Length: 614
Image (cartoon, rainbow, N blue to C red; front, side):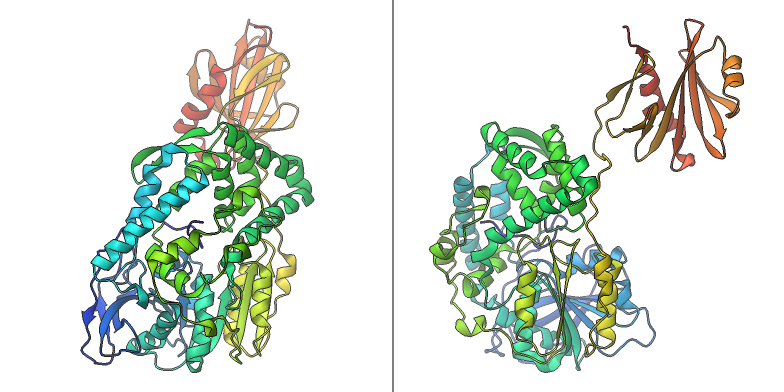
């Protein structure tokens, strides 16, 4: 089983590892620096030095990167909003700075600062426990079409190499666990000058971290939001494959229950697993562009299942997945070409992931892995973590970490119905031991609800305004999964016939009535009439207001036209001095009908016109 990626992220740039340093024993302070890669100038960025082991405050130290996004308000609330990414090993600064760049955190910044603390071991903190050995293995074996067993063995070998390198560089892998990670948070907040309470948001592993924070440092928390929740008393690894299978089935079932999706993409589950069988029998070679380099990737059906699993994390991808399955069935691999390079260049710190998992969640027997009702292609070697943790060799933290947190801290719980790793019942289970909790399941969300809709953000805003009162969540009832059924990715031309004339349009056009075709960019109407001259055409089509002649090539004349207030183009040609073939072309944005549109769309269209008789 490979690292499950919590959210699709951008390509990483490795930061050199820093060795643990001697601590001066002083109170941690914020060392302000230039901001990290691609962050706006108005952020405040820097490092806070904390003990490598909090039980040894005068021992070795590590540095945690911090980015503060100042509130839009001149008088922000005294309790900031602290955010934690998942993984474990994901970069909080990388992911949530992208959220803010897209404006998806503005609703929080209206009232309070946002503090992004880069967890120990992750991308911008020092040391950064990134395992380039695993990326090198994955990229190097893309052409080999490895089966699951071979791929997992290669990952184990690469992980061992990474382990030996990190130890040689002086990294204490025992220090990268949830207890130490949680203890960092109040120390960092003090160093930043936020000495009172704060609000804490965590997604995926960040939600698990929030529970450790509630148990060990609850006095600092005004409120907690946990999104895509992992209960402390449930071993998510044991249930990983069944939860992914349930999420896949959920998508198949919701599509089948949708009239539009079922009409556009019928029998989706059958189509998908027929593809899986075909690709396992005959893998395909696909060219991938990854960080400026071209790689040949040999994809099997099992690889496609894993891609589906990973894609379910992304709420943005969910509406496209039925269409993307059908596109692969048509031989169009845009799904693979777009998503796989992102997964292969993730900045996830695998070293931190392994230290956390081996210390906290690897204490299960292989036979405890749930395999009933799991799709065969999702079942991995149940001994993988046993093998990994035997050489990663970090101490187990103890059974007390598996006890559900009991707390009166107001907690908002958010889950997505298509989440392939932390299903909604996980969130409900955590809420059972909390005195004040409010749980919402979103019917159009994968892994992480924040920023997924105005509804989700309104619930968060209401909760932050007064965590002691249940937020109004009635808007959730109005949400639904709406799949994209317009064909977005068909580029190969399709031949159409109208009144004995053949012509080609790009594959994304739909024939919505006789002689009328529609894509996301253009609406096209075709007319075939008896006419011996352009003047006669204009007389017959008197409802069309024609202005200037724009282009003339090979007998085709293209004009500006206006039809009942809709402006566009008309291109025509008289064949055999008696038959006029006419195309009326309109665009959502009329300004897009320019020279480029003429060359890229109109010229191929008119060049394709021919008589059906040959």
